[in-house]
Image (cartoon, rainbow, N blue to C red; front, side):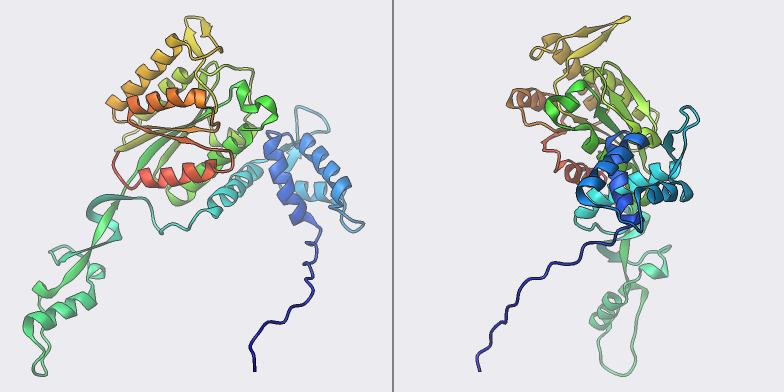
Length: 368
């Protein structure tokens, strides 16, 4: 009898059940895009409802808004009557959502905190074996390897089994490393230029990285700064509200602030991640600004390269994530990277999260 397959008509799965959960996922995406503006996010959600029928007679948009309030995701805006604002619960929810969206797509990593190549009295096992030494814990002893050593050293003749201290092997523990990272986000006007939203993916990556550090690497430090004409530090809770401004790109100000923050951290590993889509075009001079958006200005470029070299001297590598593949800028980025001895990636918006996370994990396995 021949073995084969029987085919039948494909029946698509039923539409997902309508209700709070399905609307909530969309709401979290929209409130991120609208930089925390609940009213605008709900207006967009209403338009999507009209187009795709997200609600029905049993559960309408009014029910959803009431549930958002009851569950503590939105609250009355005291400064604007009749308006709503997101709550700290929602801010954390957005970070978790970003982490699941970006980090969940990556390959599962090994459990535990980041590892260094250095072994010793740590609390995570490595793959290295060595002889037993005074002070090693019983949990470190590898019984299979130790018994094999005993058989090889003392033979298998007779009924008596002999296991001595010299037969014991232990698995080496690794030190869990601690790192300080500054994430720089470009908020110049070009981040929304030509109809392409580049700031939302950058925000999501920052929120996801912040949530990852908090959950998996609680001993690490992550500072977030934004840079346009100037640079300033923001709190992680402020990330959902981040907006692009009518700014030029003062990369020097961003790097100076990043280095100042890292100098205060007493950790062996320090690094800067910079997410940008453009060339440096601005410097602060006294109470004013030196600006030139036409080409690569020698004065701005030289100042930027000087600070890259200064970061190298104090062993702070800079990883640049260019979310544009403009060949015109590539030469500058290559020179900047060479001066700092850092790294550079040229990525589309879709691949940004993957690159940031993989590089973060990779850098944390070594002492920079």
